[in-house]
Length: 358
Ligand SMILES: CCCCCCCCCCCCC[C@@H](O)CC(=O)SCCNC(=O)CCNC(=O)[C@H](O)C(C)(C)COP(=O)(O)OP(=O)(O)OC[C@H]1O[C@@H](n2cnc3c(N)ncnc32)[C@H](O)[C@@H]1OP(=O)(O)O
Image (cartoon, rainbow, N blue to C red; front, side):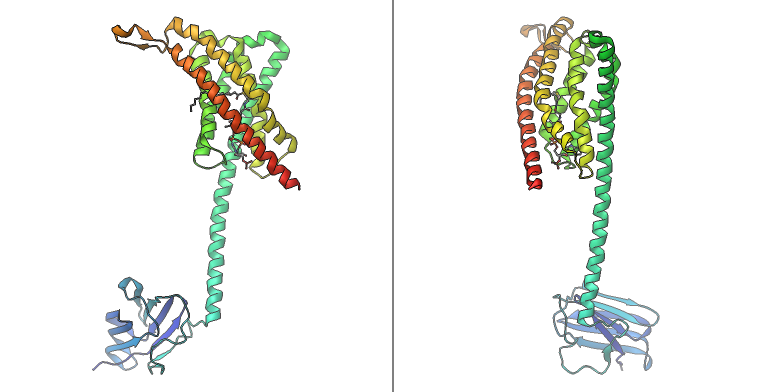
């Protein structure tokens, strides 16, 4: 003979909880079939040690898969949870209107509908707070990273600019000839670090596109590493001074502008300088770079550095100066693309400032 255990129940919007009063329950079988829950277990209940069982036909559909019907046996009871098919509040547990005698509300776990809603709201609030916390964490990490990057670049380019200015005031034109030897190590450092700018754009850390940053990085580093870095004959030329001075002249304004931007702050004069100085400096810088490339062509021809050996039928070798001629053409294309990009950035920036002012 099987007996029926005492069963206590409670609900939430998405699930039903049942607590079966059986101590040391064993051989537990719980499953749902056609919306009816079947329970059977050996255990110690109100009528002593026996086989106990019960069935419950739910008021509304529940999820019947084993993964949706969970139970856990403790020394004192068996706890069952069943997922509702649809989110909502049931007016009672069973299909039959009359409550079975063995069933009672579980007041330890009981919530009425409004309490449950409050509980959900609280949970959502906690979850929102946690995700805001995570977001804030990643924002502050990003801000810290960008600020540090911009600070390092600002310090590097400021050192270059101030150093070159002092040397210019002190030695006049003579300072043109040893710019490379006094400045290049810091310039190498800053320009290698500038790879980060392309990565920032590629990973969406800043609101800009990759192409202008890539053009800028490639254009400068080609001149710095290939033309100046590889040809000793180029290192004493005054053009190095002009290239380095023009590059650093914009960066000492651009990086502090970004540093303030990291904290949503701006100084109007700095914003204006960042978005205006490029208009004379960019073409002048591109011109200085083009002069450096042009000056290096005869040197590459003479030294055959980086020339590519060809099969005898085609000639002796392909001089690197041909690559430089192509680069000169690309420079004008790059200059045009970046000039247009900077012009658009300027328009966008000043349009936004005007809108803020109204
Ligand atoms: C691919 C192969 C192509 C081959 C090409 C061959 C060669 C081409 C050569 C072309 C000639 C080059 C000449 C040049 O080298 C000469 C000189 O540089 S002379 C000196 C004058 N130069 C300049 O003025 C240019 C300076 N450089 C720049 O402005 C940038 O490098 C540039 C990519 C050109 C533009 O920058 P960006 O697209 O980032 O524009 P914004 O500054 O307006 O920034 C947009 C938003 O992103 C935020 N941002 C950007 N960077 C940072 C950062 N590091 N930290 C924090 N925030 C950042 C910025 O605040 C903006 O946000 P918001 O709109 O919210 O304000």
